Length: 339
Length: 295
Image 1 (cartoon, rainbow over the protein chains, first blue to last red):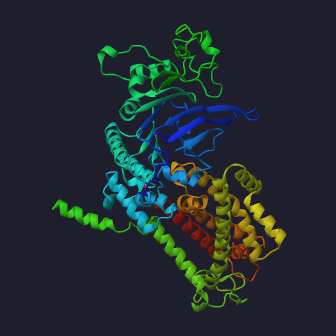
Image 2: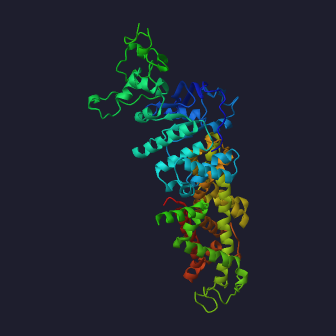
Protein backbone atom coordinates (compact mmCIF):
# COMPACT_ATOMS: atom_id res chain seq x y z
CA UNK A 1 0.00 0.00 0.00
CA UNK A 2 1.00 3.60 -0.49
CA UNK A 3 2.49 5.41 2.47
CA UNK A 4 -0.28 6.89 4.62
CA UNK A 5 -0.52 10.66 4.82
CA UNK A 6 1.14 12.12 7.93
CA UNK A 7 -1.00 12.92 10.94
CA UNK A 8 -1.45 16.66 11.06
CA UNK A 9 -3.61 17.81 13.93
CA UNK A 10 -2.30 15.47 16.63
CA UNK A 11 -4.24 12.78 18.50
CA UNK A 12 -6.81 15.13 20.05
CA UNK A 13 -7.90 16.49 16.68
CA UNK A 14 -10.89 14.52 15.35
CA UNK A 15 -10.05 12.72 12.11
CA UNK A 16 -13.44 13.48 10.65
CA UNK A 17 -15.84 16.19 11.64
CA UNK A 18 -19.24 16.44 10.06
CA UNK A 19 -21.47 19.45 10.62
CA UNK A 20 -25.03 19.72 9.43
CA UNK A 21 -24.62 17.32 6.52
CA UNK A 22 -27.76 17.45 4.40
CA UNK A 23 -28.94 15.76 1.22
CA UNK A 24 -32.43 16.16 -0.13
CA UNK A 25 -33.52 14.34 -3.26
CA UNK A 26 -36.27 15.66 -5.45
CA UNK A 27 -38.62 12.91 -6.52
CA UNK A 28 -41.57 13.27 -8.83
CA UNK A 29 -44.22 10.83 -7.67
CA UNK A 30 -46.59 11.68 -10.52
CA UNK A 31 -45.77 13.16 -13.91
CA UNK A 32 -46.19 16.96 -13.96
CA UNK A 33 -46.84 17.06 -10.22
CA UNK A 34 -44.45 19.31 -8.30
CA UNK A 35 -41.46 17.21 -7.16
CA UNK A 36 -41.46 16.10 -3.55
CA UNK A 37 -38.43 16.39 -1.35
CA UNK A 38 -36.95 13.20 0.09
CA UNK A 39 -35.01 14.15 3.20
CA UNK A 40 -32.46 11.36 2.90
CA UNK A 41 -29.90 12.96 5.18
CA UNK A 42 -31.19 15.90 7.20
CA UNK A 43 -28.54 17.85 9.03
CA UNK A 44 -26.41 15.22 10.74
CA UNK A 45 -23.39 16.20 12.80
CA UNK A 46 -20.82 13.99 14.43
CA UNK A 47 -17.11 13.54 14.74
CA UNK A 48 -14.82 10.54 14.51
CA UNK A 49 -11.70 10.48 16.67
CA UNK A 50 -8.41 9.08 15.42
CA UNK A 51 -8.16 5.34 15.82
CA UNK A 52 -11.73 4.72 16.92
CA UNK A 53 -14.51 2.75 15.25
CA UNK A 54 -17.81 4.55 15.00
CA UNK A 55 -20.77 2.36 14.14
CA UNK A 56 -23.76 3.75 12.29
CA UNK A 57 -27.02 1.82 12.78
CA UNK A 58 -30.53 2.31 11.56
CA UNK A 59 -33.28 0.67 9.54
CA UNK A 60 -33.01 0.53 5.77
CA UNK A 61 -33.88 3.86 4.22
CA UNK A 62 -32.67 5.90 7.20
CA UNK A 63 -29.91 7.52 5.15
CA UNK A 64 -26.87 5.51 6.27
CA UNK A 65 -25.61 4.74 2.78
CA UNK A 66 -26.41 8.20 1.46
CA UNK A 67 -24.39 9.64 4.32
CA UNK A 68 -21.47 7.36 3.39
CA UNK A 69 -21.59 8.47 -0.23
CA UNK A 70 -21.74 12.11 0.84
CA UNK A 71 -18.72 11.66 3.08
CA UNK A 72 -16.85 10.03 0.19
CA UNK A 73 -17.84 12.95 -2.05
CA UNK A 74 -19.43 10.56 -4.51
CA UNK A 75 -22.49 12.80 -4.69
CA UNK A 76 -22.80 16.51 -4.05
CA UNK A 77 -24.24 17.54 -0.68
CA UNK A 78 -26.89 20.21 -0.29
CA UNK A 79 -25.47 21.67 2.90
CA UNK A 80 -22.99 20.94 5.63
CA UNK A 81 -19.28 20.85 6.25
CA UNK A 82 -16.91 17.91 6.12
CA UNK A 83 -13.58 18.46 7.86
CA UNK A 84 -10.84 15.91 7.56
CA UNK A 85 -8.18 16.27 10.24
CA UNK A 86 -9.23 19.86 10.74
CA UNK A 87 -9.05 20.74 7.06
CA UNK A 88 -12.01 21.68 4.94
CA UNK A 89 -12.26 19.39 1.95
CA UNK A 90 -12.18 21.31 -1.29
CA UNK A 91 -10.45 24.36 0.12
CA UNK A 92 -7.33 23.57 2.15
CA UNK A 93 -7.49 19.84 1.40
CA UNK A 94 -7.88 19.07 -2.31
CA UNK A 95 -10.42 16.37 -3.11
CA UNK A 96 -7.74 14.29 -4.82
CA UNK A 97 -5.72 14.20 -1.60
CA UNK A 98 -8.80 13.26 0.39
CA UNK A 99 -9.25 10.25 -1.90
CA UNK A 100 -5.98 8.83 -0.66
CA UNK A 101 -6.88 9.33 3.01
CA UNK A 102 -10.47 8.14 2.97
CA UNK A 103 -11.64 4.97 1.28
CA UNK A 104 -14.79 2.92 1.22
CA UNK A 105 -15.79 -0.74 1.10
CA UNK A 106 -19.16 -1.35 -0.50
CA UNK A 107 -21.82 -3.85 0.47
CA UNK A 108 -22.12 -5.70 -2.82
CA UNK A 109 -18.79 -7.43 -3.15
CA UNK A 110 -19.52 -8.49 -6.73
CA UNK A 111 -20.78 -5.19 -8.12
CA UNK A 112 -17.88 -3.33 -6.57
CA UNK A 113 -15.30 -5.22 -8.63
CA UNK A 114 -14.92 -4.76 -12.38
CA UNK A 115 -15.79 -8.18 -13.87
CA UNK A 116 -13.36 -7.62 -16.76
CA UNK A 117 -10.31 -6.96 -14.59
CA UNK A 118 -8.22 -9.50 -12.75
CA UNK A 119 -8.11 -9.10 -9.01
CA UNK A 120 -4.55 -7.85 -9.17
CA UNK A 121 -5.49 -5.16 -11.70
CA UNK A 122 -8.50 -4.11 -9.63
CA UNK A 123 -6.34 -3.53 -6.57
CA UNK A 124 -3.54 -1.91 -8.56
CA UNK A 125 -5.88 0.57 -10.26
CA UNK A 126 -5.98 3.09 -7.39
CA UNK A 127 -2.20 3.38 -6.98
CA UNK A 128 -1.69 3.80 -10.75
CA UNK A 129 -4.16 6.70 -10.63
CA UNK A 130 -1.85 8.31 -8.09
CA UNK A 131 1.22 7.87 -10.22
CA UNK A 132 2.60 4.45 -9.25
CA UNK A 133 4.13 2.55 -12.18
CA UNK A 134 2.28 -0.57 -13.37
CA UNK A 135 4.85 -3.09 -12.16
CA UNK A 136 5.18 -1.42 -8.77
CA UNK A 137 1.41 -1.23 -8.41
CA UNK A 138 1.15 -4.92 -9.23
CA UNK A 139 3.69 -5.78 -6.54
CA UNK A 140 1.77 -3.60 -4.15
CA UNK A 141 -1.44 -5.45 -5.03
CA UNK A 142 0.22 -8.80 -4.31
CA UNK A 143 1.50 -7.50 -1.00
CA UNK A 144 -2.00 -6.36 -0.09
CA UNK A 145 -3.48 -9.71 -1.09
CA UNK A 146 -1.13 -11.32 1.40
CA UNK A 147 -2.20 -8.83 4.06
CA UNK A 148 -5.87 -9.69 3.67
CA UNK A 149 -5.06 -13.37 3.90
CA UNK A 150 -5.18 -14.42 0.24
CA UNK A 151 -2.25 -16.20 -1.42
CA UNK A 152 -1.16 -13.81 -4.23
CA UNK A 153 -0.01 -16.55 -6.59
CA UNK A 154 -3.41 -18.23 -6.41
CA UNK A 155 -5.63 -15.16 -6.53
CA UNK A 156 -3.84 -12.36 -8.39
CA UNK A 157 -4.80 -13.54 -11.86
CA UNK A 158 -8.35 -14.60 -11.12
CA UNK A 159 -11.52 -12.82 -12.07
CA UNK A 160 -14.13 -11.72 -9.52
CA UNK A 161 -16.64 -14.38 -10.59
CA UNK A 162 -14.15 -17.15 -9.90
CA UNK A 163 -13.94 -16.60 -6.16
CA UNK A 164 -16.30 -16.68 -3.18
CA UNK A 165 -18.12 -13.77 -1.60
CA UNK A 166 -15.88 -13.67 1.45
CA UNK A 167 -12.76 -13.67 -0.69
CA UNK A 168 -14.22 -10.92 -2.85
CA UNK A 169 -14.89 -8.77 0.19
CA UNK A 170 -11.29 -9.31 1.32
CA UNK A 171 -10.24 -8.03 -2.10
CA UNK A 172 -12.46 -5.00 -1.74
CA UNK A 173 -10.79 -4.31 1.59
CA UNK A 174 -7.38 -4.68 -0.05
CA UNK A 175 -8.44 -2.32 -2.82
CA UNK A 176 -9.59 0.26 -0.25
CA UNK A 177 -6.30 -0.06 1.64
CA UNK A 178 -4.16 0.25 -1.48
CA UNK A 179 -4.10 4.02 -1.29
CA UNK A 180 -2.94 4.00 2.33
CA UNK A 181 -6.03 5.65 3.83
CA UNK A 182 -6.43 6.57 7.49
CA UNK A 183 -10.21 6.41 7.45
CA UNK A 184 -12.14 3.54 5.93
CA UNK A 185 -15.90 3.69 5.55
CA UNK A 186 -17.38 0.20 5.59
CA UNK A 187 -20.90 0.38 4.17
CA UNK A 188 -22.58 -2.87 5.21
CA UNK A 189 -19.31 -4.51 4.28
CA UNK A 190 -20.04 -7.80 6.02
CA UNK A 191 -23.85 -7.83 5.81
CA UNK A 192 -24.07 -9.98 2.70
CA UNK A 193 -21.69 -12.66 3.98
CA UNK A 194 -22.41 -15.97 5.68
CA UNK A 195 -22.13 -15.82 9.45
CA UNK A 196 -18.90 -17.82 9.63
CA UNK A 197 -17.29 -15.83 6.82
CA UNK A 198 -18.57 -12.63 8.36
CA UNK A 199 -16.73 -13.43 11.59
CA UNK A 200 -13.49 -14.08 9.69
CA UNK A 201 -13.75 -10.82 7.79
CA UNK A 202 -14.57 -8.92 10.99
CA UNK A 203 -11.50 -10.38 12.67
CA UNK A 204 -9.43 -9.41 9.64
CA UNK A 205 -10.75 -5.85 9.91
CA UNK A 206 -9.89 -5.68 13.60
CA UNK A 207 -6.38 -6.99 12.89
CA UNK A 208 -5.82 -4.55 10.03
CA UNK A 209 -7.06 -1.72 12.17
CA UNK A 210 -4.50 -2.30 14.93
CA UNK A 211 -1.75 -3.18 12.47
CA UNK A 212 -2.19 -0.09 10.29
CA UNK A 213 -3.65 2.32 12.84
CA UNK A 214 -6.88 2.79 10.89
CA UNK A 215 -10.06 4.56 11.82
CA UNK A 216 -13.34 2.95 10.82
CA UNK A 217 -16.77 4.31 10.12
CA UNK A 218 -18.75 1.11 10.20
CA UNK A 219 -22.24 1.14 8.75
CA UNK A 220 -24.48 -1.81 9.50
CA UNK A 221 -27.94 -2.80 10.56
CA UNK A 222 -26.60 -5.74 12.57
CA UNK A 223 -26.38 -4.78 16.23
CA UNK A 224 -24.35 -7.82 17.20
CA UNK A 225 -21.65 -6.83 14.71
CA UNK A 226 -21.85 -3.26 15.95
CA UNK A 227 -21.37 -4.21 19.54
CA UNK A 228 -18.38 -6.34 18.63
CA UNK A 229 -16.53 -3.83 16.49
CA UNK A 230 -17.58 -0.34 17.55
CA UNK A 231 -16.24 2.03 20.17
CA UNK A 232 -19.09 4.46 19.72
CA UNK A 233 -22.44 4.02 18.06
CA UNK A 234 -24.49 6.52 16.14
CA UNK A 235 -28.18 5.70 15.69
CA UNK A 236 -29.94 7.17 12.68
CA UNK A 237 -33.67 7.48 12.09
CA UNK A 238 -35.19 9.03 8.93
CA UNK A 239 -32.10 11.01 8.03
CA UNK A 240 -31.35 12.26 11.53
CA UNK A 241 -29.03 11.26 14.35
CA UNK A 242 -31.22 10.29 17.30
CA UNK A 243 -28.56 9.01 19.66
CA UNK A 244 -24.82 8.82 19.79
CA UNK A 245 -22.68 7.41 22.57
CA UNK A 246 -20.11 4.87 23.70
CA UNK A 247 -21.17 1.32 23.01
CA UNK A 248 -21.29 0.25 26.70
CA UNK A 249 -23.41 3.10 27.99
CA UNK A 250 -25.64 2.98 24.91
CA UNK A 251 -26.24 -0.70 25.49
CA UNK A 252 -26.66 -0.44 29.25
CA UNK A 253 -28.88 2.63 29.20
CA UNK A 254 -30.20 3.67 25.82
CA UNK A 255 -31.79 7.09 26.21
CA UNK A 256 -33.76 7.25 22.98
CA UNK A 257 -36.80 4.96 22.77
CA UNK A 258 -35.77 4.03 19.21
CA UNK A 259 -32.36 2.80 20.36
CA UNK A 260 -34.03 0.91 23.19
CA UNK A 261 -36.43 -0.68 20.73
CA UNK A 262 -33.61 -1.68 18.39
CA UNK A 263 -31.67 -3.33 21.19
CA UNK A 264 -34.80 -5.03 22.50
CA UNK A 265 -35.52 -6.35 19.02
CA UNK A 266 -32.27 -8.30 18.92
CA UNK A 267 -32.88 -12.03 19.03
CA UNK A 268 -31.56 -13.45 22.27
CA UNK A 269 -30.71 -16.89 23.59
CA UNK A 270 -31.43 -15.83 27.17
CA UNK A 271 -34.89 -17.15 28.17
CA UNK A 272 -35.26 -14.39 30.76
CA UNK A 273 -34.98 -11.76 28.09
CA UNK A 274 -37.57 -13.36 25.85
CA UNK A 275 -39.99 -10.91 24.28
CA UNK A 276 -43.40 -11.92 23.10
CA UNK A 277 -44.45 -8.63 21.56
CA UNK A 278 -42.67 -6.77 18.85
CA UNK A 279 -40.81 -3.90 20.52
CA UNK A 280 -41.33 -1.69 17.50
CA UNK A 281 -44.19 -1.89 15.06
CA UNK A 282 -44.48 -1.27 11.36
CA UNK A 283 -42.18 0.31 8.82
CA UNK A 284 -40.57 3.68 9.28
CA UNK A 285 -42.61 6.55 7.79
CA UNK A 286 -41.58 7.84 4.40
CA UNK A 287 -38.74 10.38 4.42
CA UNK A 288 -40.75 12.32 1.82
CA UNK A 289 -43.07 13.82 4.43
CA UNK A 290 -41.41 13.03 7.74
CA UNK A 291 -43.64 13.33 10.80
CA UNK A 292 -43.73 16.70 12.54
CA UNK A 293 -41.93 17.26 15.80
CA UNK A 294 -39.97 14.20 16.81
CA UNK A 295 -39.82 11.99 13.71
CA UNK A 296 -40.15 8.87 15.83
CA UNK A 297 -43.36 9.90 17.63
CA UNK A 298 -45.60 7.88 15.28
CA UNK A 299 -44.03 4.63 16.48
CA UNK A 300 -42.90 5.59 19.98
CA UNK A 301 -44.63 4.03 23.01
CA UNK A 302 -43.80 7.09 25.14
CA UNK A 303 -45.14 9.61 22.63
CA UNK A 304 -47.22 12.49 24.04
CA UNK A 305 -48.87 15.48 22.46
CA UNK A 306 -45.74 17.57 22.78
CA UNK A 307 -43.73 15.10 20.71
CA UNK A 308 -45.71 15.92 17.58
CA UNK A 309 -44.98 19.64 18.02
CA UNK A 310 -41.45 20.02 19.28
CA UNK A 311 -38.47 18.77 17.33
CA UNK A 312 -35.91 17.52 19.85
CA UNK A 313 -32.23 18.35 19.37
CA UNK A 314 -29.32 16.23 20.54
CA UNK A 315 -28.88 16.77 24.27
CA UNK A 316 -26.11 15.63 26.56
CA UNK A 317 -27.36 12.65 28.59
CA UNK A 318 -24.10 11.27 29.92
CA UNK A 319 -20.37 11.42 29.36
CA UNK A 320 -19.89 11.59 25.59
CA UNK A 321 -23.47 10.41 25.21
CA UNK A 322 -26.20 12.40 23.46
CA UNK A 323 -29.80 11.67 22.58
CA UNK A 324 -32.47 13.56 20.68
CA UNK A 325 -35.53 12.80 22.80
CA UNK A 326 -37.78 15.17 24.70
CA UNK A 327 -37.63 12.82 27.69
CA UNK A 328 -33.91 13.53 27.86
CA UNK A 329 -34.35 17.27 27.78
CA UNK A 330 -35.28 18.76 31.16
CA UNK A 331 -38.25 21.07 31.03
CA UNK A 332 -39.30 19.98 27.56
CA UNK A 333 -42.90 19.53 28.60
CA UNK A 334 -42.82 15.73 28.29
CA UNK A 335 -44.03 13.96 31.42
CA UNK A 336 -40.96 11.70 31.33
CA UNK A 337 -38.55 14.62 31.35
CA UNK A 338 -37.05 16.17 34.44
CA UNK A 339 -38.74 19.44 35.34
CA UNK B 1 3.25 -34.90 -3.10
CA UNK B 2 0.35 -32.48 -2.69
CA UNK B 3 2.84 -29.81 -1.69
CA UNK B 4 4.67 -30.43 -4.95
CA UNK B 5 1.49 -30.07 -6.97
CA UNK B 6 0.62 -26.86 -5.16
CA UNK B 7 4.06 -25.44 -5.91
CA UNK B 8 3.62 -26.31 -9.58
CA UNK B 9 0.22 -24.63 -9.55
CA UNK B 10 1.73 -21.59 -7.90
CA UNK B 11 4.43 -21.38 -10.55
CA UNK B 12 1.86 -21.69 -13.30
CA UNK B 13 -0.25 -18.95 -11.74
CA UNK B 14 2.65 -16.65 -11.04
CA UNK B 15 2.83 -15.43 -14.62
CA UNK B 16 0.53 -12.63 -15.67
CA UNK B 17 -2.94 -14.06 -16.20
CA UNK B 18 -4.26 -13.95 -19.79
CA UNK B 19 -6.24 -10.81 -20.46
CA UNK B 20 -9.95 -10.72 -20.95
CA UNK B 21 -9.96 -10.59 -24.77
CA UNK B 22 -7.45 -13.42 -24.99
CA UNK B 23 -9.74 -15.56 -22.84
CA UNK B 24 -12.70 -14.68 -25.05
CA UNK B 25 -10.69 -15.52 -28.19
CA UNK B 26 -9.78 -18.92 -26.78
CA UNK B 27 -13.39 -19.67 -25.96
CA UNK B 28 -14.49 -18.63 -29.45
CA UNK B 29 -11.91 -20.92 -31.05
CA UNK B 30 -13.41 -23.86 -29.17
CA UNK B 31 -16.95 -23.15 -30.45
CA UNK B 32 -17.39 -25.28 -33.62
CA UNK B 33 -20.46 -23.49 -35.00
CA UNK B 34 -18.86 -20.05 -34.72
CA UNK B 35 -15.71 -21.36 -36.33
CA UNK B 36 -17.61 -22.88 -39.28
CA UNK B 37 -19.41 -19.57 -39.81
CA UNK B 38 -16.15 -17.67 -39.54
CA UNK B 39 -14.56 -19.98 -42.14
CA UNK B 40 -17.48 -19.57 -44.56
CA UNK B 41 -17.32 -15.80 -44.20
CA UNK B 42 -13.57 -15.83 -44.61
CA UNK B 43 -13.87 -17.94 -47.77
CA UNK B 44 -16.42 -15.56 -49.29
CA UNK B 45 -14.38 -12.54 -48.28
CA UNK B 46 -11.11 -13.91 -49.65
CA UNK B 47 -12.62 -15.10 -52.91
CA UNK B 48 -14.20 -11.67 -53.38
CA UNK B 49 -10.91 -9.95 -52.62
CA UNK B 50 -8.84 -12.15 -54.91
CA UNK B 51 -11.49 -12.58 -57.62
CA UNK B 52 -9.33 -11.20 -60.47
CA UNK B 53 -6.68 -13.86 -59.81
CA UNK B 54 -9.04 -16.84 -59.60
CA UNK B 55 -9.14 -17.41 -63.35
CA UNK B 56 -12.85 -16.61 -63.63
CA UNK B 57 -14.54 -15.52 -66.83
CA UNK B 58 -15.34 -11.84 -67.29
CA UNK B 59 -18.38 -10.96 -65.17
CA UNK B 60 -19.35 -8.17 -67.58
CA UNK B 61 -19.07 -10.16 -70.80
CA UNK B 62 -22.47 -11.38 -71.91
CA UNK B 63 -23.67 -13.40 -74.88
CA UNK B 64 -27.10 -13.51 -76.45
CA UNK B 65 -26.73 -17.19 -77.31
CA UNK B 66 -25.92 -18.37 -73.79
CA UNK B 67 -28.70 -16.56 -71.92
CA UNK B 68 -30.24 -18.21 -68.86
CA UNK B 69 -28.46 -21.53 -68.97
CA UNK B 70 -29.46 -23.83 -66.10
CA UNK B 71 -27.21 -24.83 -63.24
CA UNK B 72 -24.78 -27.56 -64.30
CA UNK B 73 -24.27 -26.42 -67.88
CA UNK B 74 -20.76 -27.46 -69.01
CA UNK B 75 -18.48 -24.44 -68.62
CA UNK B 76 -21.11 -22.63 -66.53
CA UNK B 77 -21.48 -24.66 -63.32
CA UNK B 78 -24.00 -22.17 -61.88
CA UNK B 79 -25.58 -21.24 -65.18
CA UNK B 80 -25.79 -17.82 -66.79
CA UNK B 81 -27.91 -14.74 -66.17
CA UNK B 82 -30.40 -12.94 -68.38
CA UNK B 83 -27.56 -11.43 -70.45
CA UNK B 84 -25.60 -14.65 -70.71
CA UNK B 85 -22.94 -13.75 -68.12
CA UNK B 86 -21.30 -16.43 -66.02
CA UNK B 87 -23.06 -16.68 -62.64
CA UNK B 88 -19.99 -18.04 -60.82
CA UNK B 89 -17.94 -15.02 -61.78
CA UNK B 90 -20.77 -12.60 -61.06
CA UNK B 91 -21.52 -14.10 -57.64
CA UNK B 92 -17.87 -13.96 -56.59
CA UNK B 93 -17.29 -10.47 -57.98
CA UNK B 94 -20.65 -9.45 -56.52
CA UNK B 95 -19.30 -10.24 -53.07
CA UNK B 96 -16.94 -7.28 -53.33
CA UNK B 97 -19.64 -4.65 -53.46
CA UNK B 98 -22.16 -6.54 -51.38
CA UNK B 99 -19.76 -7.10 -48.49
CA UNK B 100 -18.47 -3.54 -48.72
CA UNK B 101 -21.96 -2.12 -48.62
CA UNK B 102 -22.93 -4.54 -45.85
CA UNK B 103 -19.95 -4.00 -43.56
CA UNK B 104 -18.87 -0.40 -44.11
CA UNK B 105 -22.10 1.27 -42.91
CA UNK B 106 -22.09 -0.88 -39.78
CA UNK B 107 -18.45 -0.02 -39.04
CA UNK B 108 -19.20 3.69 -39.47
CA UNK B 109 -22.34 3.48 -37.39
CA UNK B 110 -20.52 1.47 -34.71
CA UNK B 111 -17.92 4.20 -34.28
CA UNK B 112 -20.41 7.08 -34.32
CA UNK B 113 -23.21 5.36 -32.42
CA UNK B 114 -20.95 3.90 -29.72
CA UNK B 115 -19.33 7.28 -29.08
CA UNK B 116 -22.69 9.04 -28.85
CA UNK B 117 -24.25 6.34 -26.70
CA UNK B 118 -21.33 5.99 -24.29
CA UNK B 119 -21.12 9.75 -23.93
CA UNK B 120 -24.86 9.99 -23.27
CA UNK B 121 -24.81 7.09 -20.82
CA UNK B 122 -21.79 8.27 -18.87
CA UNK B 123 -22.72 11.95 -18.75
CA UNK B 124 -26.37 11.32 -17.91
CA UNK B 125 -28.77 14.17 -17.17
CA UNK B 126 -29.25 16.89 -19.75
CA UNK B 127 -26.50 15.65 -22.08
CA UNK B 128 -28.15 12.25 -22.17
CA UNK B 129 -31.55 13.74 -22.93
CA UNK B 130 -30.18 15.98 -25.67
CA UNK B 131 -28.38 13.14 -27.46
CA UNK B 132 -30.98 10.44 -27.01
CA UNK B 133 -34.01 12.57 -27.90
CA UNK B 134 -32.30 13.70 -31.10
CA UNK B 135 -31.62 10.07 -31.92
CA UNK B 136 -35.22 9.16 -31.13
CA UNK B 137 -36.30 11.39 -34.02
CA UNK B 138 -34.83 8.83 -36.42
CA UNK B 139 -36.96 6.13 -34.86
CA UNK B 140 -40.02 7.87 -36.25
CA UNK B 141 -39.17 6.42 -39.68
CA UNK B 142 -39.12 2.74 -40.59
CA UNK B 143 -35.49 1.87 -41.34
CA UNK B 144 -36.15 0.82 -44.95
CA UNK B 145 -38.04 4.02 -45.63
CA UNK B 146 -35.31 6.12 -44.02
CA UNK B 147 -32.62 4.45 -46.11
CA UNK B 148 -34.64 4.95 -49.30
CA UNK B 149 -35.44 8.55 -48.41
CA UNK B 150 -31.81 9.50 -47.72
CA UNK B 151 -30.49 7.56 -50.68
CA UNK B 152 -33.14 9.10 -52.88
CA UNK B 153 -32.27 12.59 -51.68
CA UNK B 154 -28.54 12.07 -52.14
CA UNK B 155 -28.94 10.32 -55.46
CA UNK B 156 -28.02 6.83 -56.58
CA UNK B 157 -24.51 5.51 -56.02
CA UNK B 158 -22.56 3.26 -53.71
CA UNK B 159 -21.14 6.03 -51.56
CA UNK B 160 -24.56 7.57 -50.99
CA UNK B 161 -25.98 4.16 -50.14
CA UNK B 162 -23.24 3.73 -47.52
CA UNK B 163 -24.01 7.16 -46.06
CA UNK B 164 -27.73 6.52 -45.88
CA UNK B 165 -27.27 3.09 -44.28
CA UNK B 166 -24.86 4.61 -41.74
CA UNK B 167 -27.54 7.10 -40.75
CA UNK B 168 -30.02 4.25 -40.43
CA UNK B 169 -27.77 2.25 -38.08
CA UNK B 170 -26.48 5.00 -35.80
CA UNK B 171 -29.70 5.29 -33.71
CA UNK B 172 -30.07 1.61 -32.74
CA UNK B 173 -26.35 1.26 -31.94
CA UNK B 174 -26.37 4.46 -29.90
CA UNK B 175 -29.41 3.25 -27.99
CA UNK B 176 -27.76 -0.06 -27.11
CA UNK B 177 -24.55 1.76 -26.14
CA UNK B 178 -26.46 4.20 -23.96
CA UNK B 179 -28.42 1.55 -22.08
CA UNK B 180 -25.36 -0.64 -21.47
CA UNK B 181 -23.28 2.35 -20.32
CA UNK B 182 -26.02 3.58 -18.02
CA UNK B 183 -26.28 0.20 -16.34
CA UNK B 184 -22.50 -0.17 -15.98
CA UNK B 185 -22.08 3.35 -14.67
CA UNK B 186 -24.44 2.71 -11.77
CA UNK B 187 -22.38 -0.27 -10.54
CA UNK B 188 -20.32 0.11 -7.40
CA UNK B 189 -16.98 -0.49 -9.10
CA UNK B 190 -17.38 2.77 -11.00
CA UNK B 191 -18.01 4.54 -7.70
CA UNK B 192 -15.02 2.76 -6.21
CA UNK B 193 -12.90 4.03 -9.11
CA UNK B 194 -14.20 7.54 -8.55
CA UNK B 195 -13.44 7.17 -4.86
CA UNK B 196 -9.84 6.34 -5.75
CA UNK B 197 -9.55 9.72 -7.43
CA UNK B 198 -9.51 8.62 -11.07
CA UNK B 199 -10.67 11.12 -13.67
CA UNK B 200 -13.64 10.56 -15.96
CA UNK B 201 -11.48 9.66 -18.97
CA UNK B 202 -9.49 7.05 -17.09
CA UNK B 203 -12.65 5.52 -15.62
CA UNK B 204 -14.14 5.40 -19.12
CA UNK B 205 -11.04 3.73 -20.53
CA UNK B 206 -10.37 1.17 -17.80
CA UNK B 207 -13.75 0.47 -16.27
CA UNK B 208 -16.52 1.46 -18.67
CA UNK B 209 -15.22 0.74 -22.15
CA UNK B 210 -14.25 -2.88 -21.50
CA UNK B 211 -17.69 -3.66 -20.10
CA UNK B 212 -19.57 -1.80 -22.79
CA UNK B 213 -17.80 -2.40 -26.10
CA UNK B 214 -18.53 -6.13 -26.07
CA UNK B 215 -22.33 -5.98 -26.08
CA UNK B 216 -22.31 -3.10 -28.59
CA UNK B 217 -19.95 -5.02 -30.85
CA UNK B 218 -22.12 -8.13 -30.73
CA UNK B 219 -25.17 -6.08 -31.58
CA UNK B 220 -23.34 -4.37 -34.45
CA UNK B 221 -22.26 -7.72 -35.92
CA UNK B 222 -25.86 -8.78 -36.06
CA UNK B 223 -26.64 -5.60 -38.02
CA UNK B 224 -24.27 -6.55 -40.87
CA UNK B 225 -26.84 -8.95 -42.26
CA UNK B 226 -29.56 -6.31 -42.00
CA UNK B 227 -27.28 -3.85 -43.74
CA UNK B 228 -26.65 -6.28 -46.60
CA UNK B 229 -30.37 -6.87 -47.04
CA UNK B 230 -31.17 -3.15 -46.93
CA UNK B 231 -28.34 -2.48 -49.38
CA UNK B 232 -29.73 -5.19 -51.62
CA UNK B 233 -33.09 -3.46 -51.34
CA UNK B 234 -31.57 -0.13 -52.32
CA UNK B 235 -29.86 -1.71 -55.32
CA UNK B 236 -33.11 -3.45 -56.18
CA UNK B 237 -34.80 -0.04 -56.29
CA UNK B 238 -31.99 1.36 -58.39
CA UNK B 239 -30.61 3.52 -55.57
CA UNK B 240 -27.45 1.60 -54.78
CA UNK B 241 -25.25 0.07 -57.43
CA UNK B 242 -26.18 0.37 -61.07
CA UNK B 243 -26.03 -2.23 -63.83
CA UNK B 244 -23.89 -3.81 -65.14
CA UNK B 245 -22.01 -3.76 -61.80
CA UNK B 246 -22.28 -7.21 -60.16
CA UNK B 247 -23.90 -6.88 -56.73
CA UNK B 248 -26.14 -9.48 -55.13
CA UNK B 249 -29.12 -7.24 -54.50
CA UNK B 250 -29.00 -5.81 -57.99
CA UNK B 251 -28.55 -9.29 -59.50
CA UNK B 252 -31.61 -10.44 -57.62
CA UNK B 253 -33.48 -7.51 -59.16
CA UNK B 254 -32.40 -8.05 -62.75
CA UNK B 255 -32.91 -11.82 -62.57
CA UNK B 256 -36.46 -11.58 -61.20
CA UNK B 257 -37.92 -11.63 -64.72
CA UNK B 258 -36.27 -15.00 -65.22
CA UNK B 259 -37.80 -16.52 -62.10
CA UNK B 260 -40.20 -18.70 -64.16
CA UNK B 261 -37.60 -19.64 -66.76
CA UNK B 262 -34.69 -20.44 -64.43
CA UNK B 263 -35.90 -20.27 -60.80
CA UNK B 264 -32.72 -21.83 -59.35
CA UNK B 265 -30.36 -19.47 -61.10
CA UNK B 266 -32.53 -16.50 -60.16
CA UNK B 267 -32.42 -17.52 -56.51
CA UNK B 268 -28.60 -17.76 -56.32
CA UNK B 269 -27.84 -14.13 -55.33
CA UNK B 270 -30.51 -14.41 -52.63
CA UNK B 271 -28.86 -17.59 -51.40
CA UNK B 272 -25.54 -15.73 -51.07
CA UNK B 273 -27.18 -12.92 -49.05
CA UNK B 274 -28.88 -15.52 -46.91
CA UNK B 275 -25.68 -17.49 -46.29
CA UNK B 276 -23.68 -14.43 -45.31
CA UNK B 277 -26.47 -13.10 -43.07
CA UNK B 278 -26.89 -16.40 -41.26
CA UNK B 279 -23.13 -16.73 -40.78
CA UNK B 280 -22.82 -13.24 -39.34
CA UNK B 281 -25.76 -13.81 -37.01
CA UNK B 282 -24.51 -17.16 -35.76
CA UNK B 283 -21.02 -15.75 -35.33
CA UNK B 284 -22.28 -12.84 -33.26
CA UNK B 285 -24.27 -15.28 -31.15
CA UNK B 286 -21.12 -17.30 -30.56
CA UNK B 287 -19.23 -14.13 -29.73
CA UNK B 288 -21.89 -13.16 -27.22
CA UNK B 289 -21.66 -16.42 -25.34
CA UNK B 290 -17.85 -16.43 -25.54
CA UNK B 291 -17.77 -12.99 -23.97
CA UNK B 292 -19.88 -14.10 -21.03
CA UNK B 293 -16.88 -15.57 -19.21
CA UNK B 294 -18.92 -16.27 -16.11
CA UNK B 295 -20.26 -19.40 -17.78
